[in-house]
Image (cartoon, rainbow, N blue to C red):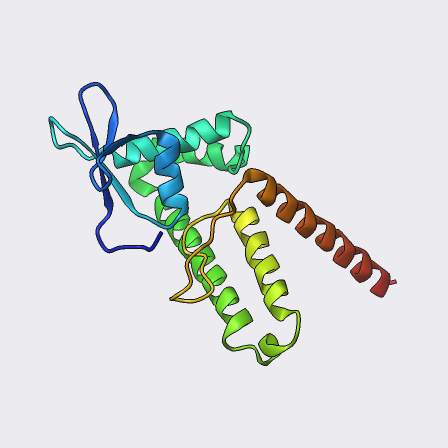
Length: 188
């Protein structure tokens, strides 16, 4: 899904149901998480009051993923976040987190661009497959965070089934283990 300038508007009704104004249907938190993983910005507003509820729902998505064992945030980071709420006036945590994630996104984009455009080896046989594996690896490592595209015109392609993702991830892990083994032999 291509990024657009306007965020996807989701309206919350009094019944707490979430309504996608673009497709005119109801969505779940997992649907919203998928929009975000696809690189789409969202804005969630309360239909009656007009209050912006985006932060509340994004935190709920993170909490649900963490509670299902899909832990991304180490305990030390969660502890520091709780501490930052007690010292908000002097806390640099929000700015630090925003800057860190922006650097990660920029680094991913630059790396993918270097693997395709600026690399003279890109035309060698097998490099396209290697680039695709690297892209899949980065997506697996970052949990599919938005902004990971190899070029401005490239759209992310979605695997048709979770089994395909598992196979890709297994293959990447196997290749990574082989590379680590080769590196350890080189250092001996």
